[in-house]
Amino acid sequence: MPVAITDLAAMKARRERFVMLTAYDALTARVLDEAGVPLLLVGDSLGMVVLGHDSTLPVTMEDALVFTAAVARGARNAIVIGDLPFGSYQASSREAVRNATRLMRVGANAVKLEGGARSVKAVRKMTQAGIPVMGHLGLTPQSVNAFGGFRVQGRGERGEELLADALALQEAGCFALVLEAVPAELGTRITEALEIPTIGIGAGPGTDAQVLVVSDLIGLTPDPAPRFVKRYADMRAILTEAAQHFAKDVAEGIYPAPEHQYH
Ligand code: KIV
Image 1 (cartoon, rainbow, N blue to C red):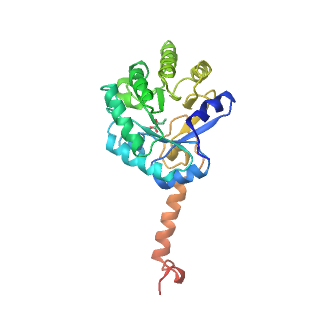
Image 2 (tube, protein in one colour):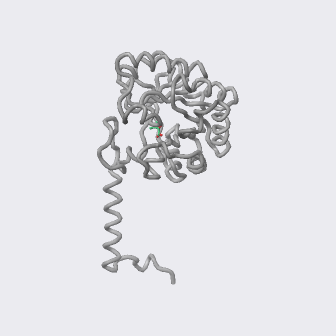
Image 3 (cartoon, rainbow, N blue to C red):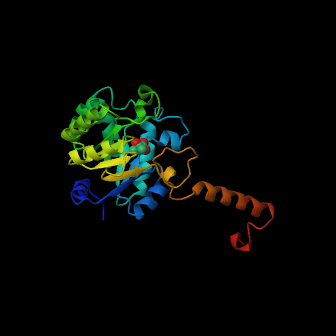
């Protein structure tokens, strides 16, 4: 049965932990959907994972639309969240609503954007327009230059600011909040202060849900991985072995065999 946005708050109320994974293509989306993953995020991490950039900053609205549409075509039951890329929502809330609408038109069920107080107005406008919005606080990769690198956020007094940002995003209408690379104690504190679910990535075990980038989950991304990554498969090794085996079979005339031929 399709997952509804409203199911998530109920899951939090029942203390039922859940997961979100990124997806960028229809085939992977279908597999993850059939595995029962309730939330598929077409993250702007696609800029690094799929397009080979060093950061998420070069991702364009056109990129986001193409990959969101692909994932939406592959998903059946999962909620598909389209990530608003850098520059697509910061200039004005009007621009934010316009670009969020474009993501919804290609099949997203919700959108995500980064930032606390500075994003509240845009969140309010989008939710008023009927667009479900997921917030994102902590190490927000679109601000990597302002942060001086991919660094843990919210240590010391900055934790109070993040808590205030989280409450402001909830008040503005966000249905869930990603917390990235913050101290575990802060992840728990924000989770306990909110009615909406928190989805952690490097935010400790106290959040309501956990998210990983799918290529990290399956061990496709090279080392070094961030501290919070746990690899649940070694696809790098599996793919290397398959490619080498294929090349060996061809070199030795083993492939194609009679059963692979047309007559
Ligand atoms: O872009 C992305 O994949 C994300 C997740 C890491 C939360 O924002």
